[in-house]
Image (tube, rainbow, N blue to C red):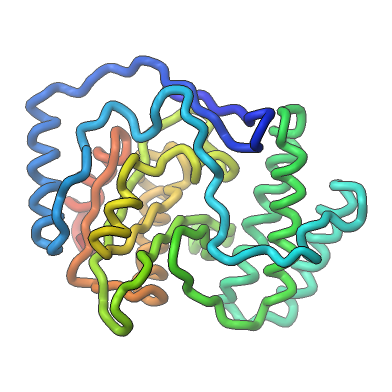
Amino acid sequence: MRTAFFSRDNNTLQYAQMPMNRPRRGGARRLRFAVLAGFLAAGIPFPLACGAESPVRSGEAVPVPRPAEVLPPEDARVRPSSPVEALAALDAGIAAAAARAAPPDAHLMFARLKSAKAHLLRDRYAPLPGADAVLAEEIAWGRHHAERVGTPWVIREGLEERAYRSSVDGSPQPFLAFVPKGAPEGERLPVVVFLHGYAPGTDLVNWSASFLPEGLIAQAEKRKFLVLLPFGRGNTDFRGPGKKDVLEALSLFLKEYPADPDRVVLFGYSMGGSGAWSLAADDGSPF
């Protein structure tokens, strides 16, 4: 079990690792062999430590992933001065942008995601140290993308958060996408889809920092493969709406990123491991 809190010093989320029961060794070995076979079939070497006890070390500060683009200085300030007024202004701007948008619009969905995060920060995280600064940044990013509705989304190298409109309830749902630097232009790259583990209190604000496996991004950079990290609606065992989230995020990812649909690997940690088994075993599974 992990607990999350904002650092007073650098506005990062920090995690404390609690003891967890280890899986039975036989099942863990079978899972590792299955994952290994998938990586090899996709042409990806497998130096990753899939048997690690946790993707985040005890007490480690993990920066909240930021979009690969840089927020212009004029957009980095909260206007008006009150966060409540700024959030209301953001929602009004998103509503106005939606009226002129042709769905699906990537900037509109990302702005809606930032609004959802800002509301959650205000309602749940506001008393925590550092939460106000993160709230201001989410509002600024939401306004930045609401103003760009109707323009193409630029795929950038590095790690960035994206959002899509869920067919389940129309809500904006996030996923993380990673593109390695220096990939040959026009080449289709293998894709690694990672399903995160269970942690109490997982929500739109804290999920992206808490479930990146140690070493995965470094290996993706070195070995030149893409990474997709779906949210899976939090702690759903990747069933029901959680399963739908993985499939819809993957569908968008394969359309917009330089991905090879014939080389897609699915694996996960803890809850994500069982989710990988159930998703792969379903009839009509793309894996």
